[in-house]
Length: 582
Image 1 (cartoon, helix red, strand yellow):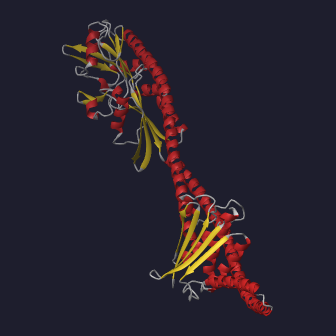
Image 2: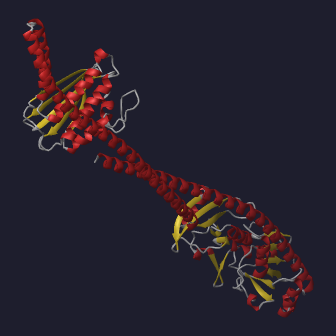
Image 3: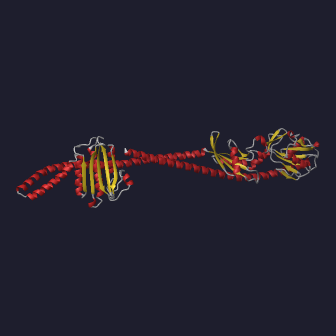
């Protein structure tokens, strides 16, 4: 029973220890993977920022060149066209636009309360009213007043010339990106408007490379799903608030677009809040979200460099399955190691118990052999006493016949003392107990041990019901042997061992007490460990430490109890109680 309990507790402890170790390793690996991914995303974001800065620098430089080229085209158109728009034909403008390698060419004339398009290479650009075009209309009025354009929040101003921002066309709706230039020096009655369309702008963007940079970044990192450059100033604003209505046409400013660059396929309803939080706090934000049944790791990195453009937030979307796959591999490895460790523990435990069982069986066999020897020695002693009895009678008769009465008296006294000692052993009543006491008394005499014994209420008990004699011998023999071994490390005058036995009628128990002197006092903890297998307090070698463990196991087998206590300094007492009829 004890062995089974110990095995169960040991295995539970090993399993708990392995699971705790696996859990610690799993979560440590998870933290390391998250930290590594966060660092990697920061590095990617830093590379993107550098690339975007360089690209935007080149973009603004080329944009300035484009504005200058449009002015050159406008000046060339001035010299190629008559001074009055009345003399200009739209077909002539189409031919001139092709010659100047621009997309469109439109002429605007001033009206008392408006500026309208009067001629154009594209008929869709004709008869456009501009009085609702805000900054553009202000620029037109300044140019017609022969002033250089000032006071506007955007655009490029040169002599007799102003170029607007990249924006969609009010008339040609399939061109979302256009560059407009406006020239007027007073030599004509119209304002010249050369235009670069979407095709040229997109070609410029391909050359400047922001989209290409983001696409290459995604392709170079297998765990990346997409990279998006968000506009933090407009992303949370409803779309309808970002457009101007010109003559019934909705026109959105190019710089107000919500997605500055990159793709935006993985949309989350939390993006607006996360972009705003990252932008306002200035801190990088990481979030794990489920989008379209796919778990993704989202990183938001704010960028405030406005040297060549507006601030933006870099959104990096990573496939979280990349992390989960590594965690799954780590979990499988940990499970494998745990299984191997558990099997090794079971194997070691089996070897340990095999060793303990073998040692215990050897001790048990030794006790059984001692029991057989001691019973045999008792029979030999009885036969010897019977043989000696005849000799004693002959000796007594010879002393009486020779009238040596003084010697006869001394001889009788010695014979009586020996008979009394033998009667004390015989009066124990239980043959097995008497045999073990007689055997141990002989051992004590040889080893100069003061061995005393006292049994009360034992006469007439030829056998203890329910308790095997061999087990009773194992219990007493182990306790007495343990006491003898302990006192043999003391001086002869201190070698004191006593054995007592008595009946407890009220509790229907038989009780044995074995006490002996000690070399040193024992602590309470040492007393508690006294019955553990292989535990011993003996300094000399050759002790298995299994004797007391066998005693406790045998006593528990009969539902009895065994306790150890120190009734006085440097003395220990073992008390065994065995129920009668157990």
